[in-house]
Length: 146
Image (cartoon, rainbow, N blue to C red; front, side, top):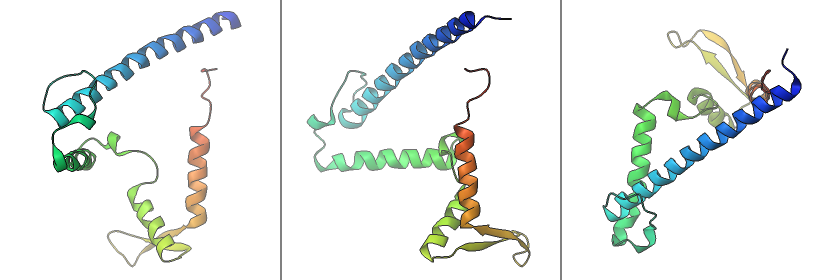
């Protein structure tokens, strides 16, 4: 059996490795941000720090975030599902918005093939309960990590 001191040293070593690894990733992201800023505002390939403040685009500067948003939207729509985020699926999100908009406490869930076939009822309480379980699961400490 591994002693508690050895286990603590192992965890400390893993934490140090993780910290160094994440620091390198963060530096890489900063370089990517610098590259994107230089390309977007100055049309140059450089990873040196630059500010958009001194650009010469004039009013066209307003188009830069719009283009960026369109690129991200395109990636989210047609790219990997992993970049679309987490949380309530779009259908449930739409249902929640309708429930709030029309002050409805519940909605019928019907079959896609036969809209007259009732599959269940979606309630505010059910949505909140499911979200609470999701949050509780996210906050669980996995065995073996501590």
